[in-house]
Length: 341
Image (cartoon, rainbow, N blue to C red; front, side, top):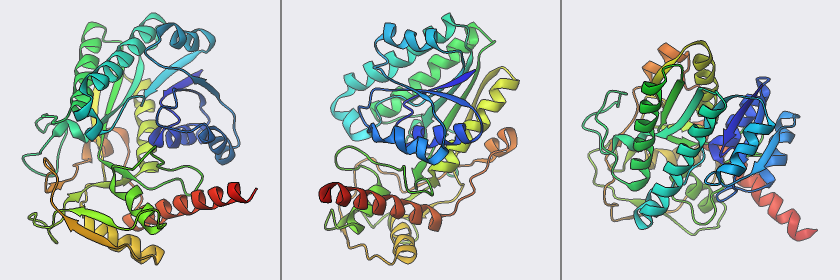
């Protein structure tokens, strides 16, 4: 029996596939490569020493996706696939609503048809919007502020209705905070197409001298140094959270929501300082105007995941920074080797 991983070639998806394979699961990946690269396939194989099936499929094409269910004995699904840029979603909301909602509906229809009722859904802390207080628990008010965040919230509501209609479904919804880091091998990591929107890949590209300077958005927030505070969590810890949820689903029915975070907050300047300390690389930065909608402080209360899933974030911020830099250095070396061939 296999685990179907949609979006399994992406940042969090690829790390989860590594953890699944290392744990002895059979894996089937579906991805349209719209925001990932085919090289990830070989890198997952190199890390794990194991093979798996891959289908390049647009999940809006139901007949193509059904072929995956027909050709494999799927036991459970981990659903990552979806467009994920907050900024892009504001510019192209209909694209996000069509892609993220319809692909999930298509997936659930096929799961229902093939009597597969074990699902782990990749949600996001963006569903909380601007929190009224921290730390944020699963019971905090839901008030997504972007089309991207609203697609995550709408999908959560769809899954609630799916479970209400058929309570044999076992669904875990994982809301994670700010994933950073990379696999310790340096073979897979965050590799966005185009200019990154997130802090850590921007820092590593400044460190690699691909960008001249890091822009820090605002320094007048009511925080330790005036810059925004976020809950940064290692991508491998997030990946292991999906394994824990998968195991819980297998042994019980119901729908459950969990925060995946460290429960600690770090400011932008603290992240820069940690990165410089562990890598020895100076990061030039410039304070510019704050971004509209940025909240001063946001971090998780992850105790429910620890209590019910037996999951807890293990990696500290220095390790997150070092793994991110190792991944960037490996990419630079690979690019250099390609030029010299």
